[in-house]
Length: 348
Image (cartoon, rainbow, N blue to C red; front, side, top):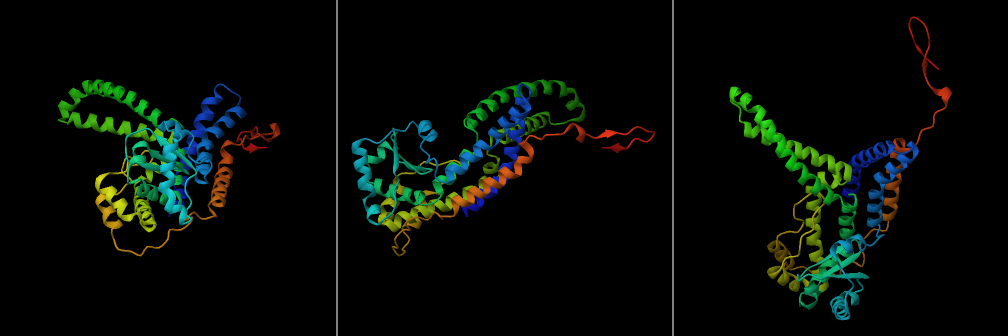
């Protein structure tokens, strides 16, 4: 389900790819040669897409820009020993564990998988809930969950969220000023026709902000996750229950249920979609304490054909977009010129 939804997201994202490429190529064409401008447009258009594909394939593993943005560090010797103890049962069962683990210096009982990398909050190392939380994260690690979320975020240009925040904050004040000026000119008109001026101005303001927001998203990337945000949220809600079940099959169901009764894992946001992707703790506790057979977890639930599918999808999008960005060469004799006469016709 996740990989199919990802491919549908890419189809919608092609709108953003084309707009970004045309925009960059057009702006660069004002200063540079046409061929150079087209190359820059193609790089701007396809670099987030290529990054997303590589993340989904596990290359890179999610510890580069993410590590810098989180301020994470390598675990200390004591933290590594705590991790080994927490992973002991999983290793005995033959379950793969993350090879790249980093620590976030925040006092929170939390952990997260980003790409193929595990991030553990410092306070969790000293908690008795560490093995249960790690078992839950192994459910994300041994599936596409962490890679899919990071691949969705990679569709947005680096710094895109910051650019959106600054631009909208600045233009919101400009819009307020313009709305005030517009209100002054419309007072007489509204009084004559007995119109609700405040409602009209508010409608124009909200509409302009939403239109600007959509334009920025189209340029920066992420229109696919934004439009399919509710569907992605439903997918990741189901995956949280699946990760809980993974921990239960490893024998940590009761420990994880006790953890959810006292703590809550931090939420992860879908790009441009500010709805939670974690289910309510009460539902998770109920599901964990449901009596089911203790079957061993799968060694690796990631299909082996996914890298091939990613390569084919990338090739299809590149071929389909080549007509836009590939430089066209015309021969001087290939131009159409009108033939003389009282009724001009097109001739070669």
